[in-house]
Amino acid sequence: MIKNNNGKNRRLAKVKKISLVFILLFLIQVNAKETLDIRADLTETEILPDDPLRFQVNVFRLGNQREDIYFEYFVETNGKIKFIESESVAVEKLGSFFRTIELPSSMIEGKNNLIVKATFQGMESTAIKPFTIKKSSEFIELPKKYVYYIFSILAIVLFIFTIFMILDYRL
Image (cartoon, rainbow, N blue to C red; front, top):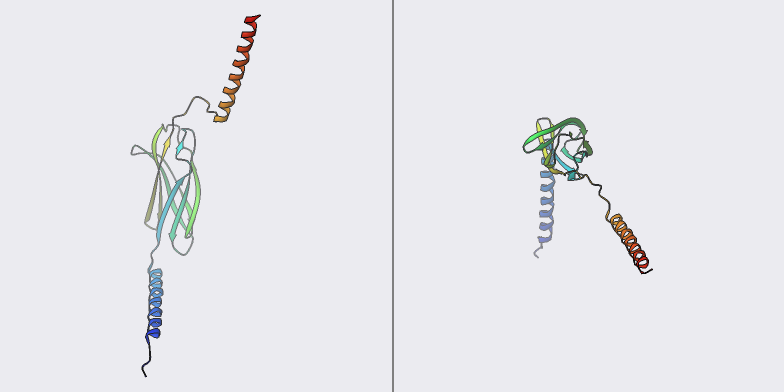
């Protein structure tokens, strides 16, 4: 009588593959070095000259404990750095925080870049986000519904004025 060991061999092969995957994951985790990655997201990509620049910084760091990371914020216009600010922030594995930069009044309208640079134990990570400073308008911009109301009222007043002019002319 011949025994069928195919089912047993398949299970043994699956166990060996799973074990190999766990061993590789363990070795990767043990040998993993510290890493640092950041992302910057602007709350608005178009701002007026006097508006502050608001953004969120997302940090990913492969490490086991809370560490201070040095951040530098630059505003670049036509290849020239116009603004620099820096700080240290304590971050564990993942971190996210909002920042606001008051831009100098010398900033003119046009395309600019926000550059966020993070430094930690000799590692650097940089995020670049473009934004535009719009030309400021001297006129007050009204919402469309108010413009419709104003034109409607003017049309009614003009209609009533025309009726009175016609009635006055006939009398």
